[in-house]
Image (tube, rainbow, N blue to C red; front, side):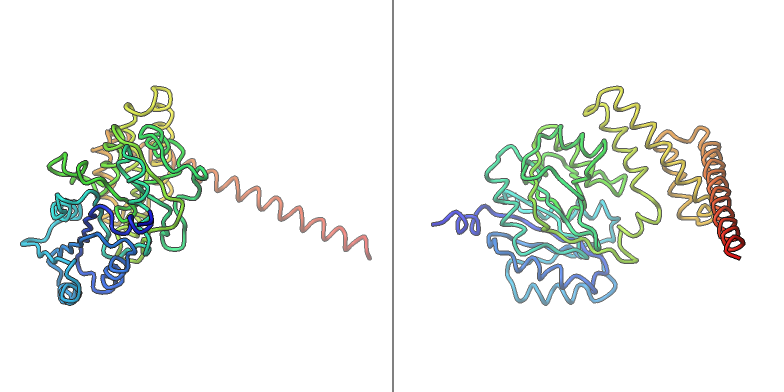
Length: 340
């Protein structure tokens, strides 16, 4: 039997999809999994008390394919709690497992390519790939043809200047034995428990990367990604990861430099967007971050400082622009006078 044929019927992979009110996209998500060229997988869909037609849709798919099992939560669960609940449905017999978010989808060869890499490299604990986020390919660039990175190398890459390779859970394949080492795989205190799990795993395991676009993250108004963009969650989340893992993966000088840069970047963003504090959700989210990230002291003075810096820069830029404009107009006027 050929290697390709062996990989199509290789070790069991357990896939789970947590879903809440996903009737618009859940069908496309399910179909992308059922189209996998790798055949040895099982699929659990965890309905988080949806109030639309999600449950009816997934039950119809389950009737057509016996690899699908549908679970119904007794109570509605927040995002990270529901992710942990979904992960708990993973089969202990599976060698690999993954989450596919309900509004995302994966390429037909996702399992074939990621399992193949993991099978060839027993020290790899996580496998990722290029992914399409809306219209953007992420990460933008990776070291060409390098498919295995040490855990330390990959963690440092993500903590420092990138590229950022962890992505959403849809992008990642895990070894199941790693997932079940902890009672709760994801930290439920923040919505980036999936990223935190990567930093934890990379303390002991390597990271695999497939140089193909294998997963697709949909960006729409109600998606977690869109909400994160509005609140600018990536900066405080990065500060949180740096605070928790920087001392493990970075030296003191790198840690101090990155901390200062990120803190200034955070307050610059807030200084540029003071008006958003009128939005109760925006204000509450960032005030909670000031507390959690030990930034509460002088936080509003820092916001004011960067507000002033930002507007002074705009005034200087405006003055420079007007000076350039007047200079061009004067030259044109002088040229016309000379022509006469």
